[in-house]
Image 1: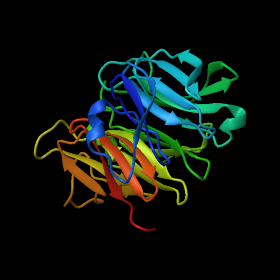
Image 2: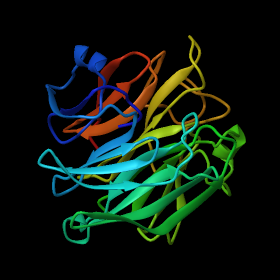
Image 3: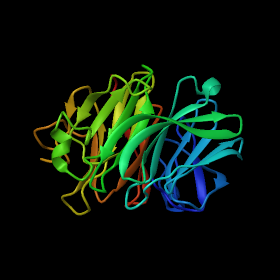
Image 4: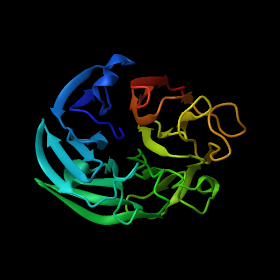
Length: 288
């Protein structure tokens, strides 16, 4: 889940782990419950649970903390640019994480290049490994930042338009896309396009279906945030349009004034946090 501040880091029951401020306690869909598991005052880029239960906290300013059974077991400082929406943004885990300790982190480095790097946990030591994807420099906003490994063992990455709306429709540019590659970054391709700022990405592991939380431009009655079912070769219309009722692929959910940030699969529902509206919402997924 993306960029929430607050003294409590909260776990949400079922198969997802989300970071929320206290204001999110007012609306809890789908039978979820809030349980405080640890305190952390920093603004988070992501909070994610590894396949073996390890809890990874990514502080937006560049610190990775790994907890096991509520105890911090490792930490690593990554040099990032954390201005605006930039920073340490998301983490995904290799299928063999329990043995290999391999994770992948999406961040904006000190030269404002968006990138995905390996991070390896060995015992109580975290180490930055090889660069997996160099997504290039951009105009300082809309970095996107959602990554997850699918049931096919490949890495899916949601990017923003990197400050230039036309990137989202340019098949030769990585901006405004869901990208897919092997875990070492090879065989990179476009899965879907037409996103303004893919703040998070979630995958239903039993079907491989990809979902993207796309943040709208600003706020107001005509500015839509979206949750999109990112089918292969889908096009969600940015920069020509956002929200429902256009000529491109329809969002699964859209709303004004929401500020969609974090996204997770919980059973047959998508659960997502809306930072502007200060709530947690759900959309029931249609059968495949």
